[in-house]
Image 1 (tube, one colour):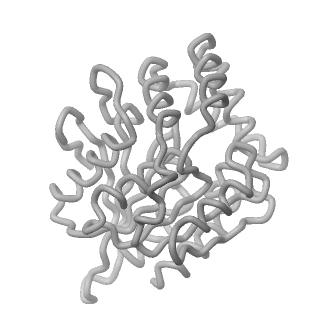
Image 2 (image 1 turned 135 degrees about the vertical axis):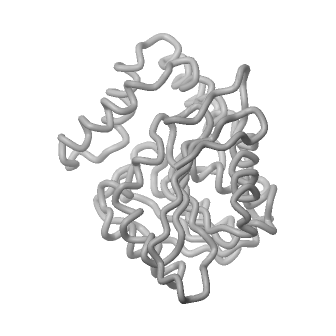
Length: 261
């Protein structure tokens, strides 16, 4: 699949559509990954969703095969990249499925581009990051190698019961990030705060939380769901922060039931 120039970024995406061509088309579902990963983290979701609706898997700026512009950027810039991609593809609306940083991008998208938001799935994410925790994390990132960062953060992100081969694979993937781009993306995450605006989100919303998430624990995820009008909440037993990979069948069922496809 191609990359497309959106503003200052070359954004790489893959569009997969195995749905029945003789039926009226659904709005696409856009998969938005977490910090340091890329579109490949959705390997369990794409086969489950693409027979039902078009699936758009995006490498957010500074990740995967997308470029990183000079200077710092914010979550709002990432959301703008996504809406520009949708315009390029001729899609008026999209269902957004975002995990962690991707969930932040989805929240910002819904606030900035409500007309383009069909629905939201917010998985293992937050509306803001505690400033003290953000400072501590950023100091660790700035003073350690990508290998150390990946090992520490991915080990914490999975539950202790995860398949160690899966954990090792993701550590290897995150280790390959350009550190400068990774840190700038982390600054965007740590600077994100839409907590006071959650009541403005009007799109149907599903909040998915991993029972064993150590990054954004269940109480913070429950608060997120309570702050968005009419939001549904699904808890995945035993899942850590990367719940879509640890509990793919349960994650997929929750999303498919919510989308009604």
